[in-house]
Image (cartoon, rainbow, N blue to C red; front, side):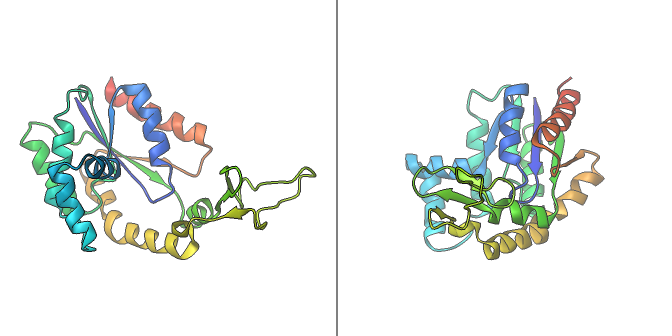
Length: 219
């Protein structure tokens, strides 16, 4: 059984690559965001506890997040291992996860870092717009919507941007990443389990590099 962590800034493509990795390895993608949403929807005891903190505008305690992870890890579909996505986000969470896994005679076997420059991430995220009519998503920097004559129409009133995709919001999210999550890079590198992938490459090349890491791990 193998345990892998995907880390990287918002917009680095972790979620997309996680789905590809699942198909290749049979590992289970465990996203803390998905766990929260499922627990809240199902009204589980842990979900209700988390909701209490979230409604009060407080961070959900690490112990509660770990309990949710453990509950998920006990599901029968987890046989070959997991890909952790969205956890840990801090050194304290990493230590807690290590202790929890060690109690189960398990450990983190590999950490994949998707490295992308901030300027690229800003364009990837803050450039996202969607059509009010069709819901189609575009990027005004990399893949702008065009009219029949091929003219860029991304500034048209027909397109909108989500509030959490604004440049100011993205900059704040990146600041949190650099402050809280980036220290994990040295932590896992010192343990000899870190693999860095250039997330600025074409998606196909990122996938190729990732699969090489995973194939070696699962061999």
